[in-house]
Amino acid sequence: MVSTVTTSLTDVASSDTALRAFLHGLPGVDRVGADQRAAMLGTRSIKTTAKAQAIDLAISMVDLTTLEGADTAGKVRAMCAKAVRPGGDAPKVAAVCVYPDLVPVAVGALGGTGVKVASVATAFPSGRSSLDVKVGETAAAVAAGADEIDMVIDRGAFLSGRYMKVYDEIVAVKAACGAAHLKVILETGELATYDNVRRASWLAMLAGADFIKTSTGKVSPAATPPVTLIMLEAVRDFRDATGRQVGVKPAGGIRTAKDAIKNLVLVNETAGDDWLSPDWFRLGASSLLNDLLMQRQKLSTGRYAGPDYFTLD
Ligand SMILES: O=C[C@H](O)COP(=O)(O)O
Image (cartoon, rainbow, N blue to C red; front, side, top):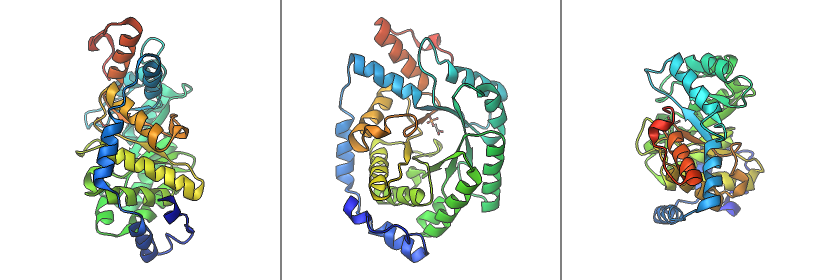
């Protein structure tokens, strides 16, 4: 794979034709192989001390998320409190992820704690709006204090082969981010093929993504292991080709400590341990944290405290 993409990437996005030629020149994904490898890695078992370390690492990688129309300032403040002190001596999570209008609430609650404020922008989850609106929403969220922006790509443009439109939008949103980090959501459940997941990953990275993210959490399937595997291969190969490291964020449907640990095994076995840190790998989830905390408690005391012991996610 790597040898085929190490040719100069300088002119890859100089025209629609060049970008299409590059993306369609990437090796095709062996679907059966990807499914089997992800399934095989999912059977690895981790015990005792290593499991405790993995659970704490997973907690530190969580983007604790609420993206509901019914979200309130009170709910976001409660989530932020939990993000900073999940329970006992558990580590704090990486970030709290909210809609743009709730960024000031999260900033007020998290200032000085080290937990980042992430916000979805660009007409999340559909992405169906003008570029001006997307850029304006991004700039407003950053001005309100967001450290990280989670943008969605224009899947309609991608699926109809208008790759430069997708590329140009990412470049424009990245510029509007300023110092804030940009996570680019591919919405892999709408991309139809694994080849498209690989192409969209490269497209996002070429356009300047700091992270590539699987899903909005509003479309099924979301963060499946094979899709995460393909994206991890992409960031590995992109770093080999360019020297720039890009993070990965599976999101959507990750609910259990077992799911989280499977993801960590995928990272370790695919991209490598350079990615085993919240700087380079996140787990976007609305209801994973409680299970991580319950499994943590079970490992240290030998019994489950039960879900009522912890505050709601
Ligand atoms: O970005 C994160 C997702 O919206 C969370 O999805 P989830 O509710 O399935 O955990």
